[in-house]
Picture (cartoon, rainbow, N blue to C red):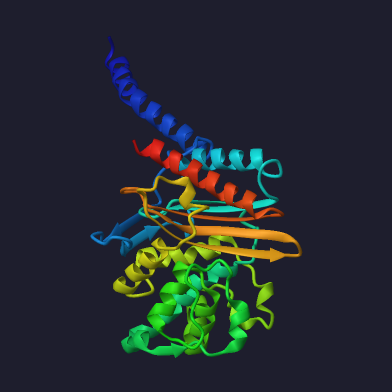
Length: 334
């Protein structure tokens, strides 16, 4: 073989793998936008642990405020199919749902654009306002308020297990407990009179949620499931109130005496910190139940808002959705 031919063969053998690699890289570069990326977690949260009802958030890296990871899509699709299959047939007229895995922040919403009258759900931010005020004045919780306004009698819920006694004094802490545990309207109104209005509004302002106290007619105030769920998120994260007060608030909410809705869909051994709201607008009932289901090691937030002509159907709607979601979480956790 001639020296020139040998040199050419050596050069060809050297260049062949390099050209192949370069070609592969070029093709890969051109196709990079056509091949779906491998799903990645876009949230990383570090939490403190060691508490019963809260799990303080220490650090969070997140690509966007609300993330709907691929692994949540199957459960979202199944819940959506459940709702579509029963809405207008067995259930009510409208259902909106917000779900969030609380330890990692994965979430989805069904009916994101729907808005409802929150009714007694607003007792949760009112409780948070009172507890926020007590941070500056801890003694306020032991301050006594006299129930002596006759005009408040008409606001009393007929289904309250232990209604306030007219003429008797109650501490603010006792009114707080009754407002949450019994959803007592009179306790709520007495607290509104006792608490500085700045604190009543501050929790909404701090979260960037529309303030019901800004409206001349609060009967026109509406919220979405996603917006309302923020109150439970910041309680669980202990990112607004102190850890002790966040824990106290969620403990109150585990004692709510409404045992239909979310609670009816989970085993009796599972704690649920939740608040319900019921409202009648032009003959149409709205029933909502939002809260934290303390599934072992995987607590999740579920907020369901509904409307329809028959409140009993709405109880069933929320209960069946709660049961379905719980079984899905249970299945995936085993």
